Length: 197
Ligand SMILES: [Ca+2]
Ligand SMILES: [Ca+2]
Image 1 (cartoon, helix red, strand yellow):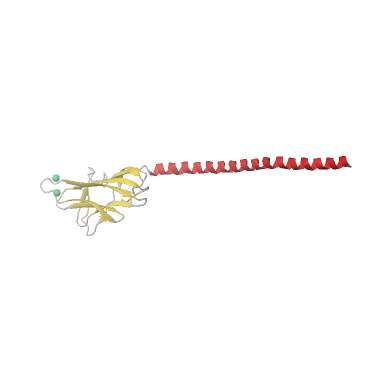
Image 2 (cartoon, rainbow, N blue to C red):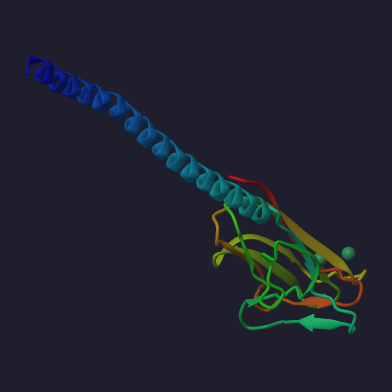
């Protein structure tokens, strides 16, 4: 009887010990599972960061240069009673497609510092004048009175601007002024992203 009690006691001690030994093993497995899940989430986040960085680098490539001229011969724009957006329909370069050759509007794809330049040609009696607008507000202007004796005048202006994503830049022919264009392509509008911010 004493021996039987001893055996039962031994079995109880063994069962307790076995349980104590198993519990840490289960905890380690649980921790390994958690680490695996975290590793998977980290890998997914790394993939997202890589994708976003790649998209941002693509958006950061912005450069366009366009002219009013086509090879179809000479053409006057204006004079009009009201200021009119000039559409530089022939793009030499339009990296990033931020400039719209249908509307003449440049839309900033990322926040950054952009440089713009425009050149205006004026051949005869009418004065010329073009202004650059940001979201509808005049920023800089280039103008010139009639050339007089030599029949050819060129005027221009440039500006560097901090733009938010979505800001719009375009050129308007000033009211009652005129621009002349032909296959010599003397009217151009260019813009470049210098750096993102
Ligand atoms: Ca002049
Ligand atoms: Ca001149």
